[in-house]
Length: 341
Ligand SMILES: [Zn+2]
Ligand SMILES: [Zn+2]
Image 1 (cartoon, rainbow, N blue to C red):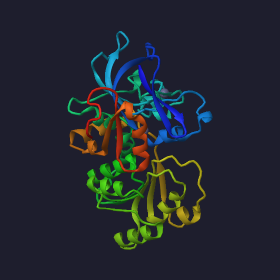
Image 2: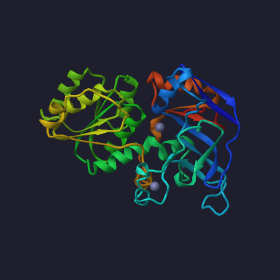
Image 3: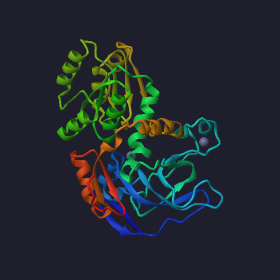
Image 4: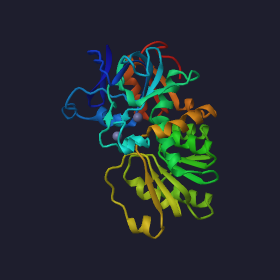
């Protein structure tokens, strides 16, 4: 089969590689579409010697099952998406649908940008008939999953003033979901393209502002108090301090982007403001019912996809995504090659 291979130094190639080998714990999917994700950029930008082994990104996958173990609930022909962090299925975390906490979890978070993809039986998300393949990538992947888990943990945000810092696909999707749930949402990013897209997705305002200017605008918007909630959707350590400057006393900072280390004045940010911080990583089976419900209620998540490109243009797809002139960039593995988003 053909698959995208990350080669380091911000390059990738499309190569002929062995097909995945079926086993009794997995299905084989003929991939129709995959999403290019910010979490793949670390591998994409790495030096070749840092990659270790040949690496193929791709964990936001939609396609059709072509092989399933005998006796499983899944059959060839089913249209499915992928939840790529899967639990053991039997521990207490898994029983309550919190697979990301499972101590024996499995990852299917690579090798998705390919014609065939092997996915464990615990993470198959059957897709509704009325969603196309690029839409299926968003609906079943972290594109909608991460903002939905964030929304579930935040609870009722109707009427609240929410600032989303960082308008990559996950930040944009947080704008969409929070506006859909009745919050007043502002966005901030450096890309004018993404500011414009955020407004189309329901942001009441979106700014490419310096931190001090953004702070002043948010103060003015909130009568001097600060935002009720700031969602950190940008993987920049400095943004933590900014989020706590923007949030009101007793407000909430919610982290969805990966930030590993940061220097931060905790007394100023947390203590004096008596603020709360929460975070969540990826999504779980317990989030899927709300994702489906919002789909049924007409959530316009398909608008997050701004570019659809054939697998042969994988390099261009990554370049487009990195340039910031896009929402979600989707690769098509077959059919509709180069179709418009
Ligand atoms: Zn992703
Ligand atoms: Zn488990």
